[in-house]
Length: 303
Image 1: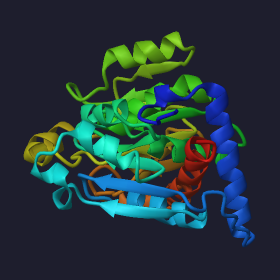
Image 2: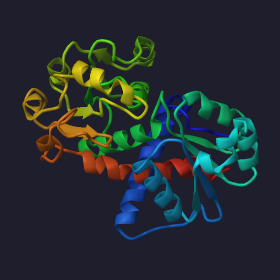
Image 3: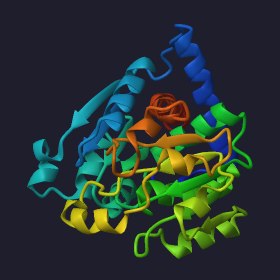
């Protein structure tokens, strides 16, 4: 039994295999080849938080693999009326083949997995967003032919995406530079963990320092779901952290820009940058579909 709750749940070889399989699935889809290895399997998708890419990519992905996806809103389930997570987990384990959860609290996903006899996938939590990172790493591989040695500059909040990216660094072999305002940097212990795994992960004092010689510039919204009450304070703290055309001039000539979306243009990224020739954002978004199909095969096909 395997779960995918954190980037810690796979090793370097498994990450490489998932990315390789995602590339195969992408090529086959472009050629009109769709097989049905998950025919008769069902994916339950529990969404505490709103979603565009996660819901659509998992639902379409499961359909294209021959299976069926169920969209479940906790308000429409007994979970919304106080049923314990462990009870819901045990019941769904007897109905479906896999569960994907997009939750406010990471601990809720961990609790669900502890009582599940089927694979559980973290579709996003307050601590990590590992499915997003699979798509990001596939995008890097497509752009540069390899993930190894690619330098990524993260500009902005040390949020769930940033944390998963840090944990992925030793698995993928990427170098990572992080520029966050004071008080918004990712946990130091995560950076130390990545370094112990052999990754070159460092904090930078400014965005300009972080993007020097970068192959990828990556940013995300400054105000994530659940942080709306902090909006004014965050907008003030993140002044100077916008990814601009001028900032790109400091990076490598072949730099590409990534954003996990949704984007707030004019805040964390300029409209001209996300729409510009350096933008890999739409490739990155598409790759959510292919990597999640590969992940479902990795977790479900042999169970």
